[in-house]
Length: 162
Image 1 (cartoon, one colour):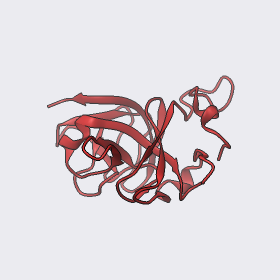
Image 2 (cartoon, rainbow, N blue to C red):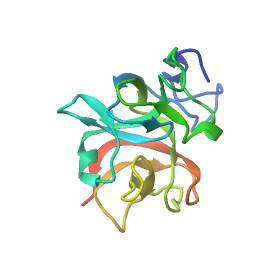
Image 3 (cartoon, one colour):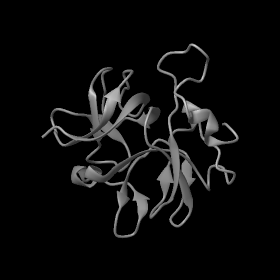
Image 4 (cartoon, rainbow, N blue to C red):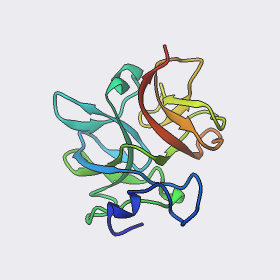
């Protein structure tokens, strides 16, 4: 956990490291309980970050939750893969959302490295491999992730593969 989002400005946690975690982070209010690693979109009506099982909602894809008021009231960013799935913020609290770069997500289905990643259709906030259920892709898997495991994606905003 870093004391500020500044360590996430570049995608390199170790000098000279490759495919390291990190990217630009914004702060928004959430409309529901969000977890570290959730993929979220903007609810334009409420101007709040939310998650969904409806792929079409991700035409307004924001990014990946990396912190929030329930996780760290000082706005710290989670860099620990063992904390993916932990509570980041509840409705009405601020949430930290990584909008580009490399982020950790939770898989609801096996994802192969190099695959396009989409929002999951059964568990809001989790990800699945694109292909069988085309729609809005969220990024590219940089490592394989078994069902229920944590994986790394390169965030690639709102590409509709359908």
